[in-house]
Length: 246
Image (cartoon, rainbow, N blue to C red; front, side, top):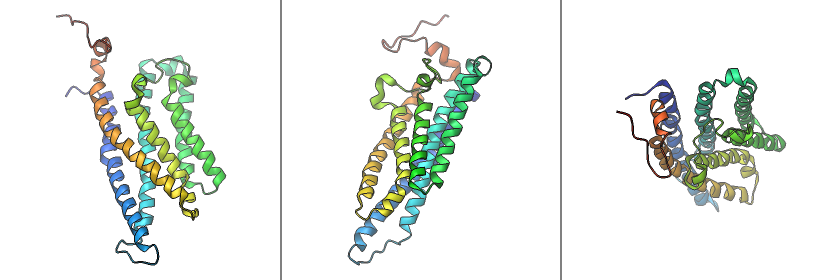
C-alpha cells in the first residue's frame, strides 16, 4: 500500500464513521423503537415489559450521536482545509485568511458545546444558529473567501443530488436541530414536537444510509496524494487521460 501521511490522515474520517458513528446510529434507532413501543403499551395505564430506563438512554445516546455527526462533519472538512493551506503555503502568503478559517472551526465547536449546555430558549436558538452557520461557512469556504477552490473540499456541486458532502451537510444540520428541540419535545403535551422529531430523524436515517454509499464511492474517486498530478490532468467529462510517457 503506497499510502503517504496525508492519505492516512484522510482515512480518519471514514474510520470514525464506521467504528463509532454508525454503531451509535443502530443503538439510537433501536432505543427509539423501544421507547415508542413502551409509550404505546403504557398509554391508558397498561404495563410494558420494556424498562422505563430506555427513554433516558435513548436521549443520552441520541445526544452522543448528534455530537458525533457534527464532529465527524467538521473533521471531514478539516483535513482538506489544512492540506490546501499547507500545499499553497497560505500561512506565509495570507495568514489572515488562515486565522479566519481557524476561528470559524473554533467558533463552530464552541457553539456546539454551548448548545449542549444551554437551557434557556433564547440561548438555544442563538447557539443553534451559530453552530449551523459555522458548518455552512466551513463547507463553502470558497464562497466565504471569494476564491474558487479554496479549501478544496470534495463537494460534487454539479451532482449535489447524490453528493456525500451535501447529504452529510443535511444530516449534520438535522442533528443540530434535534439537539435544539429536546426540551420542546418534553414540554409539549400535544406531541407535535415529538412528531416533528420522528419525521426529521427518519429522513436523517435515510441520509445516513446514503452516506454509507456515497462515502464508499468517494473513497474510490479520490486518488492517493502521489497520484493526484496525473489523475487531475484527466478529462472527467469524456473519461480520457493523457498517454503517460514511457
